[in-house]
Length: 142
Image (tube, rainbow, N blue to C red):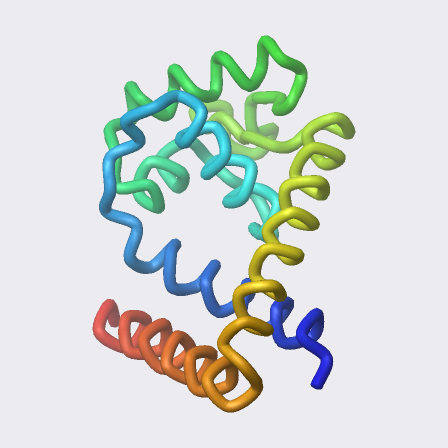
């Protein structure tokens, strides 16, 4: 059993589960900033602040504050969408991509450790349950 492979699969399922179910407030700036890094690193295509706000289940003002902080740190950039000047696009900088990669590696190692602790049977069952919950949320949102 390769727990690293299982951890990759688990994290993908968790990303779907958390993005689909994230209705918690970002009470601390760090938590919000980490969520934004996680969200941006796993998102394909353009991201606008309202996408992040919806995924976090928080106010646009909280997202704007976190984005301001991340931009000052050189983690993200914001630019006007050339095809629609009313939209602001958010993306990771090279530094932000590196930081997100470090966080992903930490998350992967921690998840692999947890799954290994559960043992093969329980780890697979847990993963299947998480996937089932994630797909149910997606189906219910249609």
